[in-house]
Length: 374
Image (cartoon, rainbow, N blue to C red):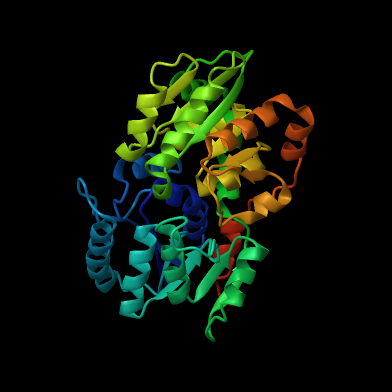
């Protein structure tokens, strides 16, 4: 009888990072793979699934307008509990640190179902930064018996927590590198696809430099995002610069962004982009300014310097390697950091030639191999 694996995803970053795992699972004849979407981010998740030609077998459709984190968790637990009873999987696999992943893992634990955690072992040491992700990933690591750590440091974090007997920790590399290599090759080899992708993006002056911005962290709501926006407004005064900002839909982000930056000619406030479009923007930009975890891992793969608008990061490997630098949400630190990269060729070269610490693009295959006998 085939081993049945249920893969649970809820947000776009989860789909992107789990796609290499799902595709590798489906290619293995000894496994039966069931894909479960929680519906935490319904539309954006479907866009990502379509890119990788993955069709979910079940959708819990948990999201409701104005829903709290507890509401999402409660809905996932309730919906997934009934599904586990029906499917009786031998194992579930979750990724990272979302509320979907945490709630699904707790549900599996209650049902006595084994849990595998992709991207296990990331830590900042503070439950408030990032919130609620640090709590979520610690919960998942606590109940998972297969812990796929993306780096040696992540493995060391897990081992330092004196894991109970029976848990397996394997270093695989990060699956985001697998997905990014695939996406970049699609854009490079298919000129028609690239033209189609770029037709929906802002028309930029090729003589100017480009800064790509993303931001959504809850801990930056309020003063933090006000500072970020003021920093971008200051940078926009440069005549040699274009700023592209796919604005998160949360009103705590979009409100200050559009109030402070709306109407500035060289600041392009656009909707959150499909995965291929965002990869295209990353390949074309000069500097990435972000608070995203995944982007911190993607940027080194594309040889792009990334300034992280957080005070701490659970991905210190990039900082240690020199591909990323923490600038927090200080207006002056952001302006100084971006300006240094744009104006100092040696500093730009130092960050763009540093070694990528996140893997070789074979993480998905390693994860699936670890599930097979022998």
